[in-house]
Image 1 (tube, helix red, strand yellow):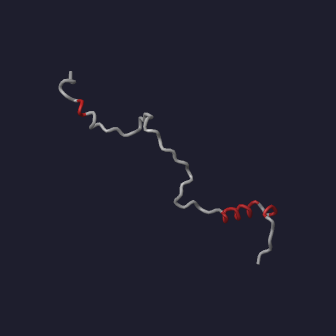
Image 2: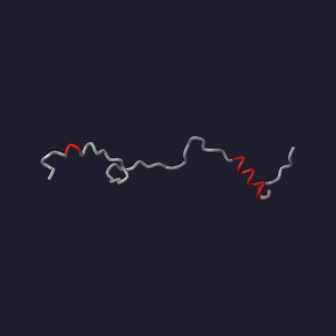
Image 3: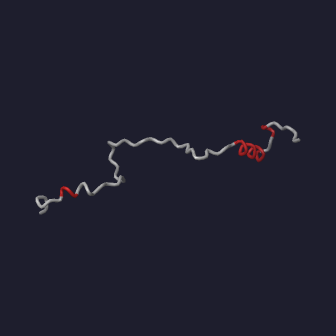
Length: 63
């Protein structure tokens, strides 16, 4: 059985080993806060549907 040594008296290397052993993983959870973007804000990178613009191509608009 190992002799108990106070955390403060351990070397930095030993403290690091203890900390990493106690630390767990997040698994599938991502700790990043996500905010839904407003639909009112213009987004240049958003994929646009050009089929909706095809209805404006009539002979009256062509010069």
